[in-house]
Amino acid sequence: MFSFLLNRLIFDIFNAFSYILYIQKHLGKFLIKYFLFIFIYIYSGVSFSGPFSDFKAGAELSEELSSSPTAKRNTPNSDSLVQSIDALNPENSNVWRDLQDNLLGNDANVLFVDDIKLIMQDYIEEAHKVPLIVTLPKRLHNFKNFVLIIENNPIQQAMSIRPYRLIESLGMNIRLEDDSPVRAAVQADNGIWYVGSKMAFVASAGGCSTPACDPSVEVCETGTIGKIAIKQYEREAGAERIKLKITHPMETGFVTDLEGEIIPEYFVKNIHVDDNEGAIADITTFAALSSDPVILLDLPKKGQSVRIHVKDSLGLEFFSYDNNTM
Image 1 (cartoon, helix red, strand yellow):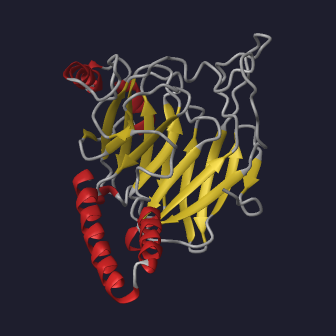
Image 2 (cartoon, rainbow, N blue to C red; image 1 turned 180 degrees about the vertical axis):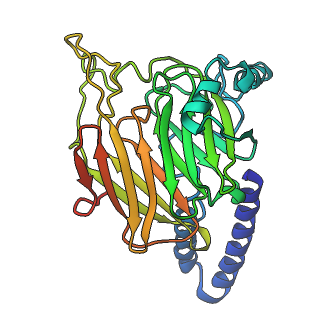
């Protein structure tokens, strides 16, 4: 993926400078800056609207098998990869078999694969808000079901998706209570579940049991519950990214308030996404997603007038139709 982007960048830069030399010869130096600005603006807005952009500012994402548990927290070393391979082996997991039966089906046909990539930070400091991208191989763009599983979380299922269109990659922000295998299970049209995995190590535990904002030490601003923001990004070859953000506390039921009382569980349950051509996806979510959850969907074809309908665990419903801002 990185070599493809690098080659594409070199090719585009070469072409751009060819145009610049032509412009310099015929139109003069003044217009060079203008055309160079236009090129950079268009290129950054289209070519880099792929799975690594438009998610969280400053997050350095990696598709390595493991995030790094080392002191420097740069890239995984040999020790962390050995730990990860051992931890990701389902035969070594105390909970995977039960999770597979409960979430994928008692008789599910499951294959663990390497071409489903889970892309997240190598250094996870904020365990209550961890950006994650899942990229799918072309053979799985027409998948039937998607389930995101965080093995060592108290809430182990983060979300599931039933699509009605081809989807190339997905993004979301999740909570991690502790170090954990994170698994993306994708059911193909042949009924087989293909599972991609990554071992996530966190700098400090408690992404599900500590507040995202601690009112005892900082000022916590809360938005209007149910506010929905949508943005559509143009990608290469007519493709599209849909980015949606829902203002919601996504309470896990494991956090206490200043008086020591448990804050009840309260989270977004269902998200329906459609446009003027019909349904795009039905998404079921749980409190393992971060507060004010962000979800990305990369589609191979651009749609028009994307709409969102949300329902939370108290039965409240929210619509994007009249509050579409981002």
